[in-house]
Amino acid sequence: MKDMKAQAPKALCEFKSTGVSINLIVNRGSPPFDNADIRKAMSLALDRKAFNTILNEGTGTIGGAMLPAPSGEWFMPQDRLEKLAGYGPDIEKNRTEARKLMEGLGYGPSKTLKVKVATRNIPVYRDPAVILIDQLKKSTSTANWRTSTRRMVHQDRQEGLSGRPQSDRHRRRRSGFQSGGELHLQVGAELHRILQSGSRQADLPAIQRD
Image (cartoon, rainbow, N blue to C red; front, side, top):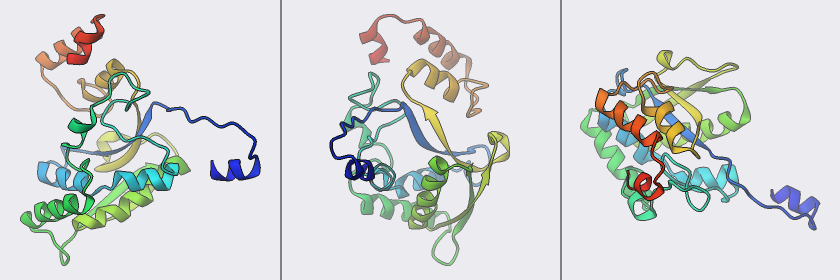
């Protein structure tokens, strides 16, 4: 955008949310990612503001599973968002907690957790993957990567970088958390019933309370 404004200073440019987020996906059924402390440490190690600064010149927004405000109707309030692992404003505090978690599992400078990041071979995926690999080092992890020219098979990978739709909560829930969904997370019959019921709900305030 800076280059565009420099070359055409009279142009009127307006940013619009795309409704697609950058996501770190791990196979929670595959060791070592079946350990919740490792997954939490990875989230704590990420500096999401740095991702935004480098990839979007600081113009992007940071949110949870759903599209952030002001574009999204189902956004998570900022005070609740900052309570999630890795979303708090104190990056160094987050990373100190990440290292403590990893050290409690036997990892450290002399024994790092080695992971491989898989992503698609196009810039919109490769660029954040490079940043991710650098940031994972902050939690005593080391990573390398592989790229693919096709859609990656989720069952075959341990860790990957992907883009996910955010704008519609029903599509997001069904694709991410329902049995047979893209993330292949098996859920019980009760959660399946709640998802189906929510999709038929027409009362906006009631939906937001869910």
